[in-house]
Amino acid sequence: MENKSLVTIAEHSREKLEYLIKMAAEFEKHPNSRLLEGRVVATLFFEPSTRTRLSFETAANRLGARVIGFADPKVTSGTKGETLKDTIIMVSNYADVIIMRHYLEGAARYAAEISPVPIINAGDGANQHPSQTMLDLYAIYKTQGTLDNLQVYLVGDLKYGRTVHSLLTAMRHFSPTFHFIAPEELAMPGHWKQYCRDHNIKYVEHSDFNEDTIKDADILYMTRVQKERFTDLMEYERVKDRYLLKRNMLGKAKENMKILHPLPRVNEIEYSIDDDPHAYYFEQARGGLYARQAIICDVLGISLDEVINNKTIIQ
Ligand code: CP
Image (cartoon, rainbow, N blue to C red):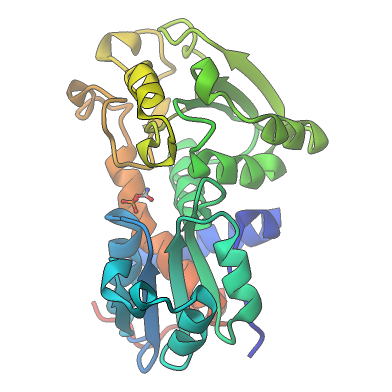
């Protein structure tokens, strides 16, 4: 079988993204089946995770696959000096697909080059988080009814936040206008702004974060300051609480504006917003289960037609 790894969402065309959204919608209707019976899915998490690992594992379990792996590299032979290369080769002896989160940018690309089975990048350093982007696109499509011509506001840590970098690359197909709101220390890096210019993605930079700044937003995408990427913790302390979304900032928001956040939340969204109709971050995360079912099936060569005509659905 052709190795169909998912390393970066930038590899996918508009048509492919829409295809995966359709597949995710099918899984939302029928999440439980035996579509992956007999398959083994490995989850190798070299960095902490709650949502990504557990939703991938749930996705596999609900489709009848078995799951192996680790959530903590300290319990593996990596502590004895085993290399990433040897780890990947070994796990490919056991599993049909490897889902990997790693702290090094480029680790997923490297793993995909040496692995005989598909690799799904579950986050590589500050670089990319393609499965998060699939669930973000699914949430945007579900709430806005389209991915085209939206005003998307990215707030917080735009330097280290891999989810916003992945989202930029995916949205290039859909003529968005991005608004970057970040402290100077965590501004969108120059190479990502160059990426926007190279791909005709409109962007505006703001330093203020208030009711007026966000009043035209269709999507307000909040992010956590990525403490784990800072070499200087004093700098983290200086910027960590800079942008907090408060309920009283939503007074001028568009009626259908939705607040997204890849989570975990630390101090970016007031808890009092959770029951506001604009809040969508927990529903967004729930959609991750269906988006990840679609991703696993796709890299294993299971088509949308097979998902639609699946005779093994468990009601
Ligand atoms: N959004 C996200 O990647 O969450 P986790 O770090 O909990 O997996």
